[in-house]
Image (tube, rainbow, N blue to C red):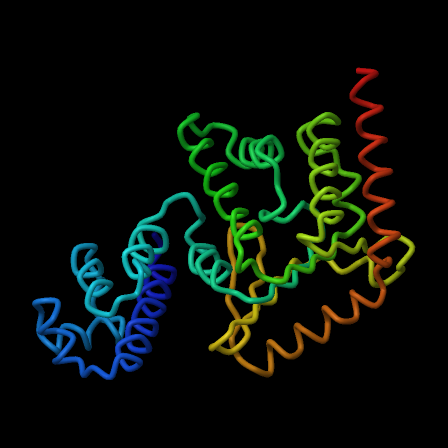
Length: 277
C-alpha cells in the first residue's frame, strides 16, 4: 500500500478508536489495561503513529463491544488488496454512509456492476495480470455491492452520463446484461438512477466522477477519481461546492422515469446487437 493511503487508513482507524473509547467513558490507560498494552500505545493508534495489529484490534473489539469493526478495519481497509490503494479508505467509508450520490461519466459505478462487466474492465486495465489477480479485484467489486441489499442500506442516487449506456464494455452481451441489472435495481427502488443525456449540452461535457457520502455521526465527504489516483475531500467548503455541482447535474438529467426507459431501450439495443453477432 502506498504511503499516503497507508497513513489515511491509520488515521481512520485512530479516529474511530478514539470515538468508540470515549463513548464507553474509558481513558487511554483504562482501555490499554483491558487489551494488555499501555495507554501510550492506545494513544499512538489514535494519533496514527503506530499501525494497528490484528490481534490487538480483536481485543479492542472485545473491550469496546464494537462487533468486530476494528478487526474488519485491519483486514479489509489496511490489509485488503482487492481495492486500489487510493480507493481503500473510500471503500470503507462507503460501507458506513447513510446516503451516497454519485456521478459516473463513462463507466457503470462499482456498486452497480455485474461480474462480467467488472471483469471486462479489470482485464482491460490489467491485460497482463494473472487470473488470480483479476478474480480478486472482481470479488472485491461484488462484495462492495452487498451494502445495497443490507437492511440498513444507504440511500443511493446515481447519475449516469449517456456514455455509460453506449460504450459496449465487454461486448454487446455483457453490456445488455449490465444495463438490465441497473434497470432491475431501479425498478426495485434499490437505487434512484438518472441519465445525463447528450442533449444536456454543456452539462454533458462534465467528465469528472464524484461520489458524495453522508454519515449519521460524521461530516459529509466527497471522493473524486482520475487515472490511477483518487482523492477524499472533507473540507466543508469543497464538499459544499461538489454538492452544488452535483445538484446542477441532477437538474440537467432526465427524470428517473424517462431515464429508466432510456436504460431499458439501450439494453435492448445491445441485446439485439449481441444476437446478430
